Image (cartoon, rainbow, N blue to C red; front, side, top):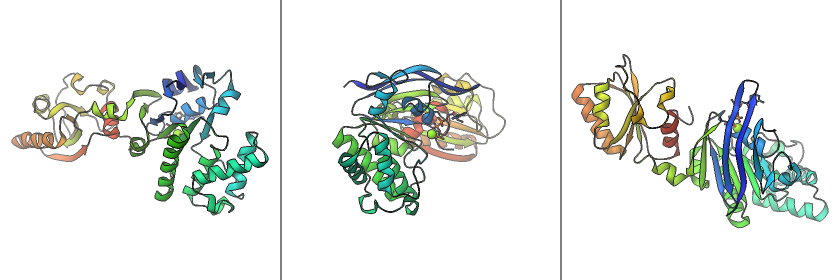
Length: 336
Ligand SMILES: Nc1ncnc2c1ncn2[C@@H]1O[C@H](COP(=O)(O)OP(=O)(O)OP(=O)(O)O)[C@@H](O)[C@H]1O
Ligand SMILES: [Mg+2]
């Protein structure tokens, strides 16, 4: 499959602040591609550059072979954008809002009416289409927002956190719409979220974004596979290097490292084993344990700590999923 999107070293800075620090990735035609990252990671800024809302500070990207800066009109025809913030007229009906967006794209007359009916169907709002949207729930407004990004039949749809503040029913409608657009209309979708469950459900491949960079990019299966058997995080009243070495040597443990409560030291990115030995920590510490199988590892670690009479202050188990991949890569949780 050819790439419909190729981003090459995109950078966006605001004064001294680097919002996107050089992002490169490509999306193949027909994929549902995830951009997963915490608040402020740079997801919206990346999408804004790819859809012509923001000009990159440096770097380039091509959409359907067209340069995003040199050929904005071509790119606009291919792209559909569903922004994170709603852009709708509250006193108008869903239908009138969608007609407005259709006209911006040059649709008129019967074609416009048919396109609006079609997108209302896609987001399951055909029966409420003529009510003013100020009477809609938050989730229904989001669905109109999605429909607005679809009126001109884009080949590539960017959905920016489409389920934030949405009721469970609308959330399910949104998931179904995404899956149907992809399967039935072969639409390529770039889906940003900080909900790893959504990305796991919808996406084939995912780029994990943190602090303006892609820190991992692969299929979900491969990303999760690199962890082995899940991660355990233990709060302990004390931890010295001897204890750390003994825990690393337990058969179900594949790695163990101290994690600071305020966030990781720079050296904690990457392999846990790569940590240089540190002096004994005086107070309570967080210990991150990568396991071959979390249950076995927990039993072994607890057994060992009991022989030393060390008290626990907390225990958390992260089964192998994108959340634990993120924790593994950054030492942080996706949602604090
Ligand atoms: N117009 C702006 N001026 C200055 N800084 C900005 C501007 N827009 C975004 N930023 C900063 O750039 C960084 C990336 O923001 P961005 O909105 O792209 O993150 P995000 O991953 O979409 O986060 P969220 O999950 O909260 O939507 C943040 O630190 C943000 O404060
Ligand atoms: Mg955002």
